Image (cartoon, rainbow, N blue to C red):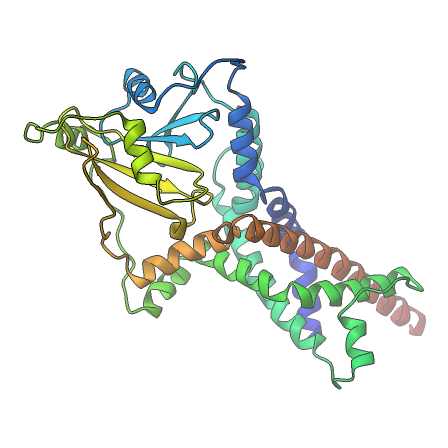
Amino acid sequence: MFWIHLAVGLVLAVFVMSMSVTGVLLTYERQMLGWARDAAVPDHAGETPMSIDALAVAAQAAGAEPGHTLIVPRDRTGIVQVSAGRRQNVYMDPYDGRVIEEPGHAMEAFFSRVMRIHRWLSFAGGRSETGAAINSAANLGFAILLITGAFLWWPRRWIWPLVKTQLFARASYPSAKARHYNWHHVFGVWFLVPLLVIVLSGAVFSYPWANRLVYAAFGEEVPGRSRGPAPGGEDAAEAVVQPPASTLAAVPLDRLVNLAAQDSRSWNRVSVSLPGPQAETVQIAVDRGNGVQASKIRTFTVARDGSSVVEPEAAPASAASRARRFIRFVHTGEVYGLIGQTLAGLASLAAALLVYTGACLGVTRLMRMWRQRSAKA
């Protein structure tokens, strides 16, 4: 077991270190991108942000169509986003509605490059199939390291004076080897579970067979990709714009947002599905989380005249689909908010430390063995 652990560790050290360091850099990607985009909003000292109705008009003037989503932060001073799909976004100044081209471009380019290295070992350009295969294999190899490491860590006798030496760092060490040995054990045991969660969830993204296992565990098949029109496309716009004529007197969107959010405390942003000119209702999502925590997002159907606010029962997602979404964001820790992200970042940092200390110990051992055999020869 020891030699398996040592051999796998030395072979994969560079690749696991690469994924660990980039994982640390990606810890607060969502917050950093949000900060950079908000920083791109020009200074409007003394001015009042536009109303949601005015922002909707500005969004339509910029090319938005009924069915596209207008995302407005609660403080109304941050950048406004108009989304027509996952990768089709326009950003606007909340004070005058002007389109801001590529807000936070430098920050986004940085994280994009780090992500390409993290996922595909690609230092230039797009996806590298070879790099993706290497990183995926290294990720599985790291799982082997964690499991064998736990086996090797397991004390032969559970005596507290002995066990605590492998649970806690010491104040001082007689040598670098002693320090590496202690740190390797301490950080390995404390971050074993978070690292296993990160590694196994990463395998689901990397391998179709792992993704199929998630669905098979719930007795389901992997759903095929939809080939219908993109959200907000011509067909979607036509479906919204051409309903029967509405007899409701529309009230301002700001009032409808207040009605939808009246029972939601400390919400962070609202997403308004831009209605067609004759639509009788508006879809409004109130988000109390970070944008990916499904349990903190409530979606309402609000009558255009403000006469009713209904939280419709959405078609329940299958157990496998819920699990797959959970796996997607447990990998980054975002499913548990800032605390989860911080834990994932610390686990990645611990992984880098495990690689460093393990490589030092392994190379030292191999060199000592080589010297002993040379002396005997």
